[in-house]
Image 1 (cartoon, rainbow, N blue to C red):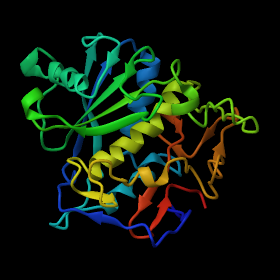
Image 2 (image 1 turned 90 degrees about the vertical axis):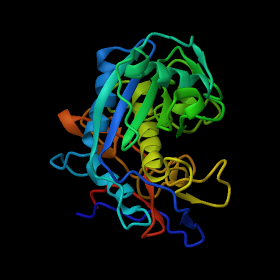
Image 3 (image 1 turned 180 degrees about the horizontal axis):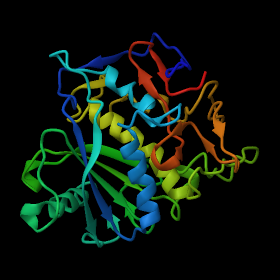
Amino acid sequence: MNSSTILVSSPTVDVEYHMGPVLTSAIEVYMIWYGRWDIAQQGIIKDFVESISVTGNNKPSVQQWWTTVELYGDQTGANISASVHIAGEHQDNYSQGKSLTRLSIQQVIKSSLLENHGTLPVNAKGGVYMVFTADNVMMQDFCRAVCGFHYFTFPALVGYTLPYAWVGNSGQLCPQTCAYPFAVPTFMTSVLPLKSPNDNIGVDGMVSVIGHELAEIASNPLINAWYAGQNSIAPNEIADLCEGIYGPGAGGSYPGSILQDSAGASYNVNGVNGRHFLVQWLWNPSLKACSGSSTT
């Protein structure tokens, strides 16, 4: 069984190391639930994140998928950590309203910290703060240009430099854009949507974006580590290079050869609690190709 299957090899793509830090310490994920979330929705996302470090799941597994991220290291020779766990959660009941910007999201993170009457500690070594917005919350550029993004907080705003990500639930706002391939744009008349593995198009769509952003935070937390090209303002990172690729043979509107469960739902990795997920592949620096967990 080969956990990394080459999809498209491209020697012309040059992902370079720009000498910045990567997350070599145990990665502790702090989840900020912004807006209205139910336990079932949260459970899908939490099971995915906790699956990253679990080795006993059926193959192909989320843990196998993360081994591609572990190939990246820093100038000391240390590689990205194999340990990813949920370290805390915080509920925010629309403190910044239902229309957010890239700056107001940092206010959300600031208010989540213990020192600001929140519930989360400050963890500048291995801490990743992930803001998940509910399906009635709009983010700047959401649905048009982004389904998620990562950056770092500004000390002038938050008091610390903390790697963070935002991912939105597109289930009500734009599933055809950000929950693809579980929903498809109307102009793609010949393409049928796939059945989502956890019966929630918006949240199942989020899972792949969460994986995308976690992989890029780990390998480029301060936007000065691993990416392709010379544009540090909008770098091509290790997940950007493989968007839309979920299995062998992917291309165009075809996500690749992926698995189906007994109910006809599509997935490519197994996780904890019997979960199935569909996550995009990642750029493998050794193979110079997109790769991911595979049963072949």
